[in-house]
Length: 271
Image (cartoon, rainbow, N blue to C red; front, side, top):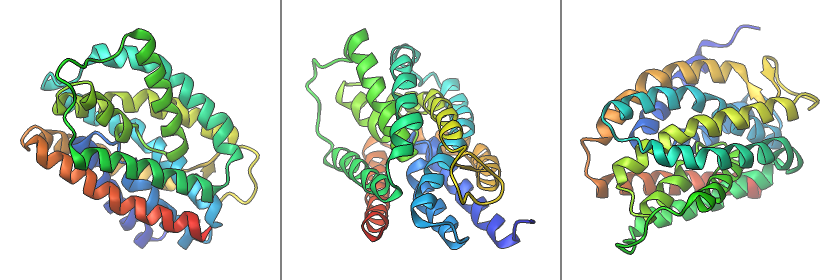
């Protein structure tokens, strides 16, 4: 069945905006995508709980492409801390697989919406308060970063985000410069997304009442349109990130997250 042109336009606008924000804030776009894709799928007649799960999975799938475009732009400016990426990535993969293959499939969509709201609100508050870390605090050792990566991957798998809402505040707390934290978070989005997407595809194979053109929990029309547009605009956001002051970046980050957390709390409580 052909996709209505109005739906394509909605998805394209969403992809354009989330791609730019992914590059600007290192959030992978998932914080914005999940609420809007939930709304779009619900309007297509998908049951509320399933709509939330498919929005989370589809959002995560688009991050694979957004991350590539965003990290290339940040890498050219030498902003990515690849040493941190190498230490966090193994834990991220483990945590992501546990979340997407197990816990995600067991939890109801309403609970996932509430979990999304809680963690996004926490992240927004941390960024808004802009607490200064102790000058002597550094990134933890290998074991500590393995545990941190596992936590980032697990929570990201439950809420469909690239992990920036946890990894950016975490790295800032460890005295990683804000622009480096944003750029490194963009790089971390790739292993987070890839690991979780594999889990969503496998765990969603036997789910009933999936809409047409679904691959497990992933809604392919949304993935194709959003990923295409976000891939084009992510480098523009990355360029803007290096031109804005740190304080403004944090205020933008926090303000967006508060609004989206409120919407997902509403969806969770209504469900």
